[in-house]
Image (cartoon, rainbow, N blue to C red):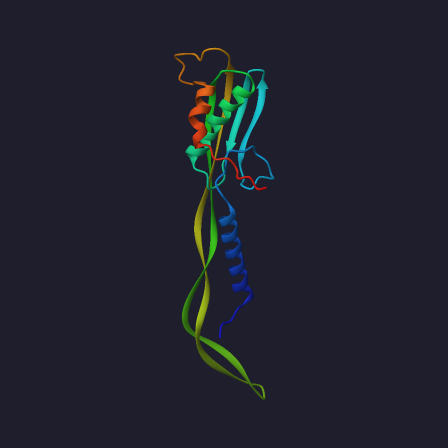
Length: 188
């Protein structure tokens, strides 16, 4: 006979919810940052002046650092062409790593003797030893890491400066990175 306590039920439900949430979560695709997205994260940009922008790409815990940095570079190139410019220069660039540690409950079982009290009547109780599965709570510490890359870019027209390693031809970047860009699935 298996006993289910409220504590055990709570641990089971918490574990099931975490499994369900992680099963539904996917790495951040290339998308604008919005609350309605199926996967969290995405790009955002802010115009600083007519030829300067601040571009950011925020990944979720399943998005690798190199993907976040590649999507940032792609967004900078895409923004450059959308604004009618030919090349951009990375004036300032940074990647932040945010790590937090959480304890995730796991359900473990073992078999053992468990005393069970039985009422015999006339205010008498007895212990009945039963051999059954015993549940115990166990927590595993997990690290969740998220990356966010940001850059200030300067936009330019004409030929890209030849000797500037921070300058990129926007159309060339789009052409080279396009095959590696994972876009959100169409959910229609």
